[in-house]
Length: 480
Ligand code: ADP
Ligand code: MG
Ligand code: ZN
Image (tube, helix red, strand yellow):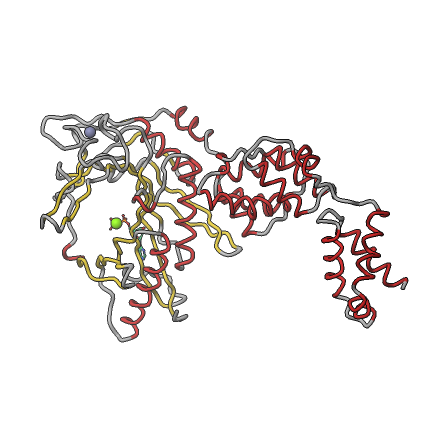
């Protein structure tokens, strides 16, 4: 990246809301149904039908507004955005123009170790369009209207983002926030979250913005990162060669890693927005707005910061724990038992348990594992009743049964041997069988102690207390 330039990015994120029914009719809001089965005269745009606003859409959007620290406009309206395209049978999309439901907010995101505040211009509600299926077999295009009328929120950021990394952090945080609020399934691969990326560059130190280019067809957050890096470099090259940037829309091709011109500003459409006469103004009572605010849980970035401050966990670990609300709740429930250290709980969840969740592609709540059992198992290690290795054996059992870890330790004979007499016998035997290692130790190669302790552990069939064995091995050699 040429350091004489600064990148400026603004993002428009569309998220499908996971309501039961569509925004203006009773059709199911469901992904993956047989084509054109979740449709009715309203969402097909037939003449003479009347849309009725789904209250749940408004509530979900207000929740997102609260999560992003927005002002909520209790009285607002809906507008028609007019354009023709075959995926939009009405030839207009019901959206919000000059009075969005939420505006003037911000989102704090973590970039590296720093908190960066990104302004949120507005969040408005609107309906999704259908999907066109291009079918080579019949040499034509088919239209699936199941997605028509699926509720969306559009979240528009201020041009406050200064790098591809910041953009990625912002998008990731929007994503986890949607999941925390339970208002969207936020599945990128199903297109539930999509984003348009606006990029400009300017000479470092300049206070004026450069001309922006908008990119469409950015289908994942990592693609957004690549698209921004590419577009910024393209603009800098144009400027360095004495050219100027045109305001235009370009299409990102993630496979080729390039973008191509889609339309210039001159081709920009005039959407002839006007208030939808079928819907008119609506008002949400202040008590309702306040009640929705009270339902907002602690959000991922706040959680991450709290884990770092209160539990002295690293940023990376805190962020991973906070990423998924179920995992975070589980972590907190284990700590609430007061039986074990945050660091060991974090290590077990992010290590062995995460591995299982990845293998089984499931949530922590789907395991039989309970916070109480995990806490008990970890406390047995911390009390040195069992070794770390024995802890793994216990975990294997409690992942899938609600069996008391103490029972498992008894049944499988996993308790650590801390009895000096028994351990002494083992140390003597191992030292006698490993004269060379003992000699090496005496000659200053003190790291062979690891090998000797390993032999003792083997001799004890994994049950010896390794810390005690180490002390005893060293003491015994020194006495020799
Ligand atoms: P449009 O309807 O043309 O897409 P919007 O107002 O919906 O316009 O979105 C504009 C987006 O572009 C916002 O996210 C905003 O932050 C961003 N933006 C505006 N100016 C710039 C700029 N100079 N460089 C980068 N992004 C910008
Ligand atoms: Mg736009
Ligand atoms: Zn319908």
